[in-house]
Image 1: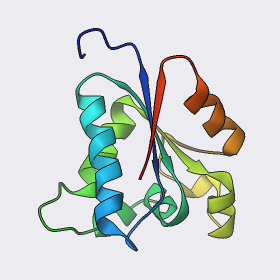
Image 2: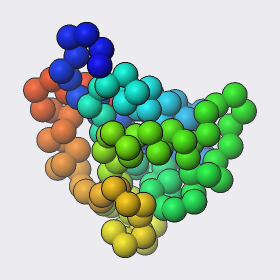
Image 3: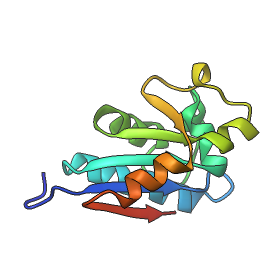
Amino acid sequence: MLVGMARTLVVKATAGSDSPERCAQAFTVAATAVAAGVDVSLWLTGESSWFALPGRAAEFELPHSAPLAELLHVILTAGRVTVCSQCAARREIGAPDVLPGVRIAGAAAFVEEAMADGAQALVY
């Protein structure tokens, strides 16, 4: 863990394959923070919601970027991953469809996490 770190990093990914660099940045930052021992919560919104489904992250490709499936695995191992409830509903994604460890929650849960003492929120 980073010395003196007792904070939570809340990362919101708003892009998927429609904006691959922005998407990869969100996953890379979240996974790097997890690897450093930071408490991480990754929110998948918009097109990034698809990566909550089995196999979807493995389909993502971006030159010179770590494989998205590996980054997601790191985050799921020691962090939290949430899909926006409205984004999931628009894509007809339900709780039985997502990877183990992924939850579906709404804006109130995001605001609660982002506003908690010691939280830092980043949006990509």
